[in-house]
Length: 403
Image (tube, rainbow, N blue to C red; front, side, top):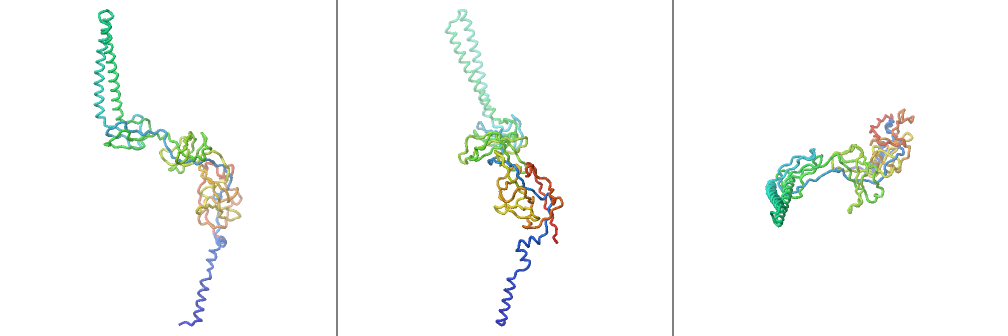
């Protein structure tokens, strides 16, 4: 059994050892020491971006979908059984091509009956017309009475009316027969086939949909609070879901005069500018109407580091890098850049594609070309990236050993 004095010394030694931090832990806990001990970062001219003022499109946000202007929902105009469907989804069709055929057995009988009635009415009219002409000639010679001629004229007129009615019934029957053949109203593609052979087509039932993929347009919605900024002919820059690498451009063609009662949004129709347009209808699209142009500092998304709701850039100054918080504004969908409201100034240099292993305050070694300030011009006339210029995502330069 240990003596009380010896036990107290052991406990005191253990407590002292536990409370004394290791030398490595001190360095790790001190950011300044960590930055000083970290290897220098070798930065090439391509790794730097000089911030400058650039103009970007400012205006109301527009959201919606891509829809064809020429589209047709073909429905059954009579009650019949579907005999055959001749086109599938995605197949191209020409105007007049047969798409769906309905059963016309009962209608064929109606057409035949109407034809026979029209033929009998035609014969009756011919006979009445000959009788009237004979009596008319005899009455002129004084060999027939006027009453007989008038009676023949009445019979002729009645026969003529019967003939016209019979021809109308024939036209109606043939029209019904034509409605059993559903044909393409214009050149396009089949977008949605609704029936299959054997289905019962009720009056008004959807059979097939046809659209013209060359007539796509952007059917968007704008908040009613911003409708005062909308004008016909304004430029619209937008992105389409499914085409992430393409920036589309259009012109406002029509602005609705009534807002949606539920969403309080105004519908805007935008025509595509140029020949390039999506070939698929129903895709989600979002963009901005360029109602004005504003100048501001712009930064690319690749240069931003995000932590929750905050955004940071790695600024390069005095031979060191500094993690700098920035406040972002609107995003220019055309250039893919963000407006910087605060945090950095015009002329500041930041890393284009910062890595996640950087340390705040880490030393930076510039290459000879970068040290002389001859950084390749990656900016427009205002100092910000030129419109439409893609900033290459270059890898960070390798770190040089500080030893």
